[in-house]
Length: 391
Image 1 (cartoon, rainbow, N blue to C red):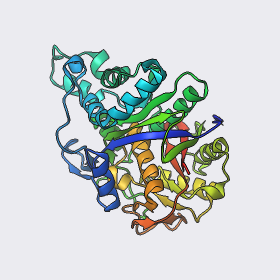
Image 2: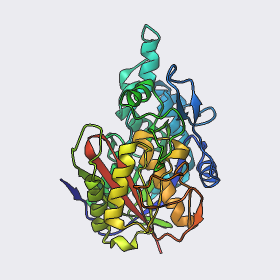
Image 3: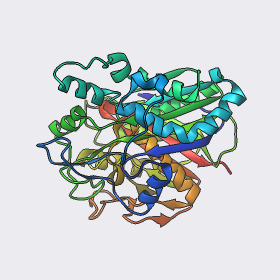
């Protein structure tokens, strides 16, 4: 059914940044999140559908001249996210060598939005290139060009579990000795096929999504991403402690109703980290706001961790960022450890009476040593990651 990859130690998360509907910088995102703000708003993007979407605010930086042929919204988000990490990336390359720094990133849609625009023009623009505008691997080439990293590079695309699975990939690269550092994360952009596809499945809300609420009626789509630098050793406040992955293959789009897939991923992560369930201080839930997902995940959390552990879904603030969702939520898990404070779970009231978990619509002080973050995808692809305080 699945497996956990055993880590011999925690790996240092030496730098991280993110952008989403809450802001274009890590500082803006976290200030808005803990301030109880939502970046979701009704949008005309997918008319005549009525839905709330989350777009990264403001203009995005242009690509440098050497990478201009890769110019897409996805690539510009890569510029936005990589720039704040450049000092740490440069230091890692100087310390280990460029070939010892890998890149493993996640995306669900890749450059699909650029292809939609190109095909919508009627005649493909002369500067459109499928390989540079659409293909997943273009994202690796852009990040290599931006950062100078020359180690193994690839994109993970397993729908909404993608950006948690990159941590498993990074763990394997580090534990095998192939690299000494890995740039991980995920980036996705809004596109018509995704929005309309979720609508066709009947799981797209017409309003900002409300995870765990009794009247929840679907999810909201967002865009953005996050990048994190993970090193074999180094100074860091937070460590990557464990990863659990499984594939229950219950259904093409629906989760196993009893939460068995999500429960298995959490148990594998606990085993990988060498932790007892009682040591988990907080759960960043996948919490999409769809009727089936939320109840299944709640059953899984109850079965593995019990009802007392504080649970938050941040998708009411950011929207569901698909392949990038777990990347931005890794930042939120790290922030909870560093701040000793949990963000609010927006829109969770009135609570679904079947969901008996410790969920709060308000931010709250709570010391966290270990946090587990869940990502549950179509097709039963599930992944959980555990982050822990370094001391």
